[in-house]
Structure formats: C-alpha cells, structure tokens
Image 1: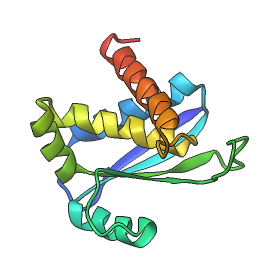
Image 2: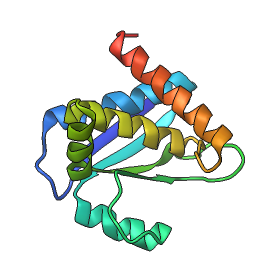
Image 3: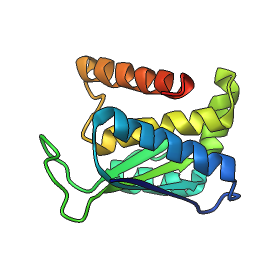
Image 4: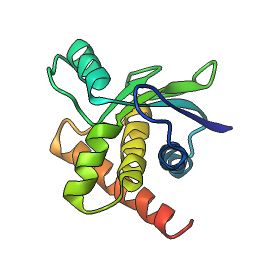
Length: 148
C-alpha cells in the first residue's frame, strides 16, 4: 500500500499544491515499486532554513529536505510502513518555478519526486549517483505528464 499525506504549515493551505506534492511522491513510489507511507509538509523558508541549519549545517533556506525513517545501504523493510518525511518550502518552490518558467505546482511535484527518491535511499553526492537520480526524476515526470 502506498500512502502520501500532505499538509501545509506556515503557508496557505492550497489544494492544488497539496495534490501536486501527493501526485509526485506517489508516482515516485510507483516507479520504484516501493510500498509505504510518506508525510510531506509544505512550509516556508524560515522553517526549512532552521531545519537545514540544524540537520545539515547549512545556514540558508533550501527547496526540499528529506528525512528517511531508515538509512543505510538498502531499505529492506519498514515495520510500521512509514518510509520518511519530506519538507518542501513553497516560497522557494515559487521562486524556482518563476526562474524556470513553469508553474509552482509543477515545481512542488518535482520536489516531491526528488524528496521521495531521497527517502528511498537515492542521493546525488557524487556524479554517477546524480546522473541516476536525475534520470529517474525525468522519467517519473514524463510518466506523470503522459498520464501513465
């Protein structure tokens, strides 16, 4: 079973933004054949800045943070099916969407895909891992756009 719960905290609660996050995360779970639950919080730059500073040592806002329930070489099984949590800054997503020339909803969907892949154990620390993650993100977005 795949479940994605999305809520807004510190930003207006917009259904279109919540649905975009849910759709992106579910598409990534389906693409990877993963089962479980993910919680996504749509938040503001101030909240994500504090978390980025406290958890990553980076003293600035970011677009998305992922908190996997279990980290390691391989995600084998999660007893309660909770895979992890994702935080998305709607304020940063809006700025990035404007810069890239697409909608805020598409940007939030992309960030949910990105965050879900992190929760599932993917990363982009080195170039080869970044290539894999970038390819998966593109393929998932393409599947969504094609209605698959």
